[in-house]
Amino acid sequence: MRTLRGAAVLALVAALMAVQARAAEPVKIGFITTLSGPAGVIGKHMKDSVELALDHLGRKVGGLDTEVIYRDDQRKADVGKQVADELLKKDRVNFVAGIIWSNVMLAVAPTVTGAGTLMVGTNAGPHELAGKMCNELYFTTSWQNDQTPEAMGKHMQDQKITDVYVMAPNYAAGKDMVNGFKRYFKGKLVDEVYTKLGQQDYQAEITALRAANPKAVFVFYPGDMGIQFLKQYAQAGLRDQIPLFSVYTVDETTLPAVGDAALGNFEARYWSPDLKNEASQKYVADFKKKFGYTPSYYGAQSYDGILLIDSAIRAVKGDLGNKKGMVAAMRKADFKSTRGKFTYNVNHHPIENFYLLKAVKGASEVEMQIQKTVFENHKDAYYQDCPMKW
Image (cartoon, rainbow, N blue to C red; front, side):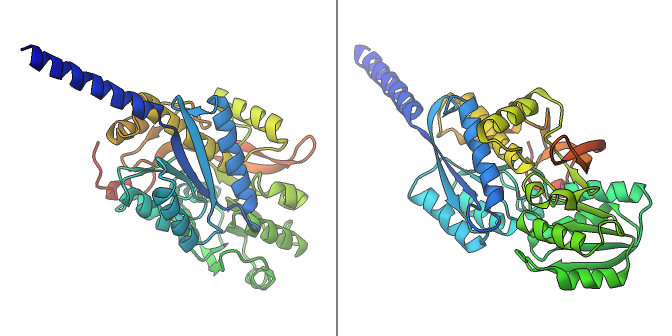
């Protein structure tokens, strides 16, 4: 009996030592975004927000020493997949997060989840990952692509706007954005134009737009594309002639370069720096103090992503091998999100509010201000195609 009791004690001690060893391991997070080229400004907002989240957590995610490894995808799907492979195999990260572009996400997410690693998207929301390709190990702290343009489509439909000219880049998110817009906007479309991803010159398209003489324009041009389109639209004298409605085009990454050329523009979003809740106001104030500029939703989503990971690790008491426990914790969304309280749908995409914003002249610069709530607790259009049940 003594021998059996002794063996049991030794087994218990070994198990405790194993748990302690795992708890002592640092957590490694691979964060992929675009850090070079014209779109690098978006990546900077995201990286700076990750750093602020780390500050707020005492530089320990889930109470563990933390290493965040930043990688540049160069806005290319093949590069994104390559750096994801390196993070998984060489750096042996516990989580992969980030990703701006949907074409990159469609290459990276299956690579990460296929390796049995948790993926936390903090921007791109291609419909495939919300529907049939949903995965237990994939979460997003942003939205599904269609949701925001759905809000703008509803607003324009409610306003009885018609004869709308639609433009977007020709890639996964561009198609999702237009599909989302058309899901709620039922008025007449004058034309539906797709341009090259990363395109900088829109003179030919604007000439064609002018000739079509629509009553309104709806566009999706994130980052550097938005800067160039907005400037050229204003220079063509169309700002005061044809109202411009957009998503992910006029924001805190583009306003410093665009300025007055954005005045009067309407946008739809799930978050804005003027959103009134405790977590958001702390994030915005501390971000401005640390970095000296106004954060964007790209940043807010990335900040939330780190807090989501933190909540998961805390729930399993630092046991990074307990992925089922971390998934269960993440599904609860038990952290102070910058958007306020939200819940996860069965496909691990947020059920959240969406707002109409307008570009107005602020105290010292052009800024976006919330005008009204378009959707409350809005679900994406693809969750019923997701086979997960929980």
